[in-house]
Length: 235
Image (cartoon, rainbow, N blue to C red; front, side, top):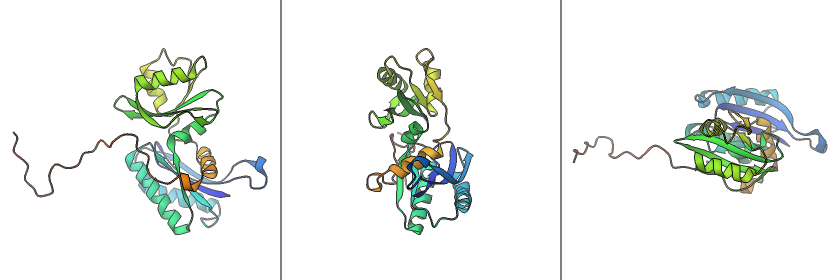
């Protein structure tokens, strides 16, 4: 099976085409075409060109069987860019589009036998987090205050050494240096494309819809008046 993956949720703009081993299960994933640029803004301007170049290297879009896209948590604008592109491409090719959790993909980007904490800096003293052991999630993705994240991670790690992956690793290590001195930190700006491809291949399209995953209400608030309406006098 051949898949295209799209990721614009965090600090990179990624488009890649991968193939599984087919009948040769031991062959693993093969990179057919991959383009990736580190960025926190400007995904909309770059994604189309990166996807075109990755597909050209892989022999074109026609052989793609499904499309995987990160659905969050992550940047509100970045998520919308990736989702809109993936859904448009899926409609044009008549191929299923798979939604992949950014936290799941971050956890799948590292190898570890013990506890893996996928953590993304959510600002305002919080992280988006999900804990894993042996590749299996230990609960749902949540937005945690830093203190809660520390307590949950240390409690699940027990006597073992946790692995922190994602931008939240630096935040937690700076806030609680004594607690995470021994922790292994993987400060990935974005999930590994290979991890995205593996999750896309393994997913059931019926249970992995391409809809955004928001763990916190948006910072923006609705306008208090319609365009052209006068401002209300101060009380």
